[in-house]
Length: 104
Image 1 (cartoon, one colour):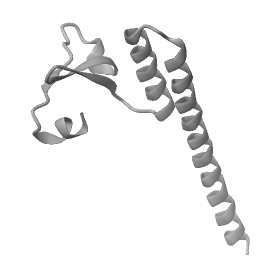
Image 2 (image 1 turned 30 degrees about the horizontal axis):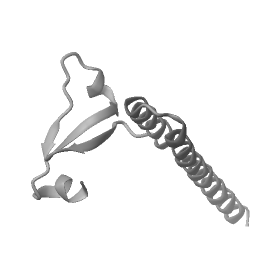
Image 3 (image 1 turned 90 degrees about the vertical axis):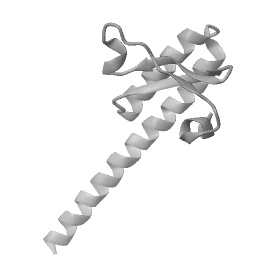
């Protein structure tokens, strides 16, 4: 029937859109890998990566943190909070407690 054909066409369009988004995300992952081998300055690299990830995945906030001693320190980020005057990225203790320590 016409209703079934319309439903199938809508579903196919949704699947196509989802695959297009997924292909774009994989393209960005490849681009991040390429940038990692071509940008030698760590700060520049991290800034580039967070911007690429935000744009490709549509995230509101993206940041990258590195371990220094026993702290996890945000080194680069994009999102509204990063542009507010006086904003200081958090420094989190990596003391074995909590999800941040587990991930680190």
